Each structure stands twice: as C-alpha cells, then as structure tokens.
Image 1 (cartoon, rainbow, N blue to C red):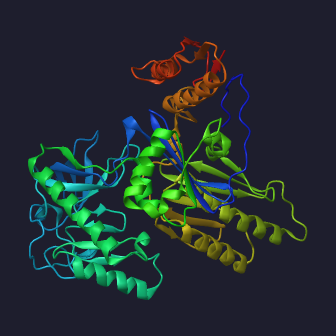
Image 2 (cartoon, helix red, strand yellow):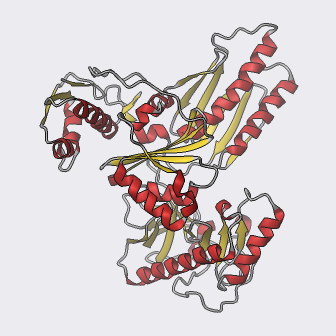
Image 3 (cartoon, rainbow, N blue to C red):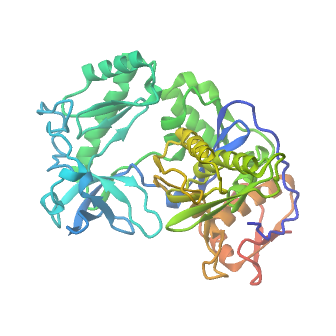
Length: 519
C-alpha cells in the first residue's frame, strides 16, 4: 500500500540498528505509546496503545450474567464494555467464593481452591447449573474484543507479578517451560511451596530463574496484597465496574518482557524514560543500565528504520531474498498465504528450485505471522512439490520455526495440493486491524490507514518541521482528518502549546484520506 502523500520535507534516511541481539524501542507522545521489538536487523514485534483505546486483556471486572445459553454451553456477562463478554462453561469455577481470602481451606496441590479437580471438557456440568441470569460474578478478560466479537472472559482469575503469577482460586504450582534446568525448577518450586498460603497457586515465570528466596517471597507478598485489595474493591464497587486494571504498555512490557536477554530498551521522550527508569530502579535495579534515553535529532523510529519496516508490514506482498515472494491476504475468517517463485528460476532443476523457495518462505511466513500478529485459521499454499520427502521437509521446517512463537499453534501436514492448514491463537487485534480501516472509497473492498494513525503521522511530521524551522506552517488535509486534529487537547493544541507557533489547518475535499501537505 503506497499512501499518496505530498510532504515536501525530505524523509530521514534509514540507518543501521545495533548488532545487539534483542532490543526494545519505545516511542511515546501525549496520544499513544508505540513499542517495537528488534532482533538483529529486523523488526520482530510491534505494539501500539492509544490513551482512549487501551487494551483490556488481564483486567478484572465485577459483572452481571445477562443471559445463559444452554445450546452453546456459554453465558454472556455485562462488564461495562461496548459488547457483552462471552463466558464458556469450561471457564467457570464451581460456586467460587471470591470473599474467602486466604484461610485454611481444604485445597491440595492437584485441585483448585476447594481441593476439587477442574473437570475436563467431556465431563463438564451444564452451564445452567453453574451460573444464573442476574448473578454477580468476578471475571477476567482472557481475550480482547476482536471485530464484532466481544471479549472472552474467565472466572479463573490471575495476577501477574515480576517473578510469579498468582492464581488465587486455583491451588497449584506451575513452572515456565522455558526454565530448562530440572534442578532449578525443583528449587524454585520448593521455595514457592514452602512460603505460599494455602488455597492459592502460583506460576513461576521465566525471569524467576536464579532468583533468591527473599526476592521470590517479596514478589509473592506484593501479589497477595494486591489480591486482597481487589477483593475489597469487588465488595464495595458498583456493578458493572473494573476492579483491577493492567498497567500501561510501558510498565507492562518492563514487568513481563524486560529481562537479561534484552540488550537495551531505548525510550523517547525524557518524561517516559524517567518513568520507566524509576520503575526499573525499584523492581529490577540490576537492569537499570540497560534503559537508555534516545537523544537523536530526528524521530527514533525514523532513525532506526522502524517506520519503513512498519510500512512494509502493511503490504500484501513480501519479497524473499532469492527473488521469490509470498502474498498475504488477511480476511475476517482466515488468512491465505500464497508462495511464488517470482524472479527466482534456479540453477539445476525445477524440484530443487521449488523446494528452496518453499523453505525460504517458511522463515518469512513465521516472521510475518508474529510481526503482523495474525491469528485464527491460516492456509499456506506452497508451490506444488512432487516428492513426498520434500513435502515432509517443508512441514518439519515450519513446525520447528514455530517453536519461537509464544502464541499457541496447531499445524497439519502438507496436503496433496501442497497446502498446509494451521491455527494460531488470536489474543488481540492484528497489525492491520490496529492501523488500518475499511476503505470508504471502495465500500470496504480495500484498506487504508485509519484517521487516528494519519493524525499521528502528521503529528510526527509537524514535530520534525517545527523543530527545524521557525516559520508558521499551513497544513492541507482531508476534512475527516482535520476533525481529528482539531479535537480538544488534540494534535493542534499540543503543537501550539509545545512550540508557541500557530499551525493553520485547511481542508481539501478532493484529498485522499491519507493525503496531506505541509507548506
């Protein structure tokens, strides 16, 4: 997708990233936070969080059951969102007592807070026996609302900390699979088992590896205190209401993902850096030297080439090093990926050419699935291979490549038609759903950048222009984008407050939504 932009200032040149293995780049302004994870020279993951559109995954709500559907073995719960939330029977505890606290219950290590084992999907009671219409219930968002679907919720709540995840209603101790040393797993499990209260459980996170008993106990005490505060809010809050809210993107990333395998976290501007540095100083002081303030003269995402990679991640066609390509067509129900040899013609025979292109495509497909956060049903149409051994090799290579993906995947073998069907767990909106919207010029047949994303592009371009020059700026934009810019405490107010200069906005009806001009 090539936006028809007529911006007269020259674009910053892309410069090389650091050779360090894994790095975070965090860009913040009064309207949104953007986080990029880079590995080597490539953008691996991208997150954006706007102040008026923060994610709700992990939030805990006090809600009311508004309908029970025996035919679906599910219930819909009003928790104060735009759409009612979906609660499946497998995610409902048997008569949970959320005001129990941490007393001497009859819990054991194999069951939940009442010593009862969670039932399997084939041995579950009926939904109408577990919840009733009008019942008040505490639930946690397990999956964000996506498209026309409401949030997926569960009554098995959990509270994540730095080293542990508290499961206050499920008495079991789990250890992250990424901790491979069996002796270390036993040591950590013994520590948690010896100090935890009865009736609750914990998951030991990957970053807990090598931590002392004192550090683990400190994190546990914090989580137990947080849970008691949540219980108190559950009792006193009106219905519906949020009773626990996950921290913002910056602090959540530091808590969950900022570990010793991250070489550095570069942050812009200074206000966000100071906030992140204070958080790291308090909870993980040994990692404080890895928090860096970006002090370059141009936008950090421009300097490190992230803006260029983001633009490429919105394109349908992705070129492979050999000259082949993959075409990604993302629809509501599924995503179709087509592999083509393109300009690559090989040197020996067609079977080897096809095999090399398919194997090369595997790595790029996995990269794009993670970067674009594509979930649901995925159909990959590889180039037809005559030899069964080659099909098996492509399948094994794809399966091995998916091991680095934290999202749960299920993959079937290559069919006779050279097609692989797979699923990838969908927990939040994809990159295209976050940054694009249905094109108003073609009745939804295509996609264009949404108005909020364009307003942020204009904000960054205005910042660069006003920092370089002392002149007034006249901005020509599409009328619908002008409305976003002129909102109270919006981009224009921020520009005038920050630079003490007047930016004049003029609308041009014939401009495409993505088109704007600075003079």
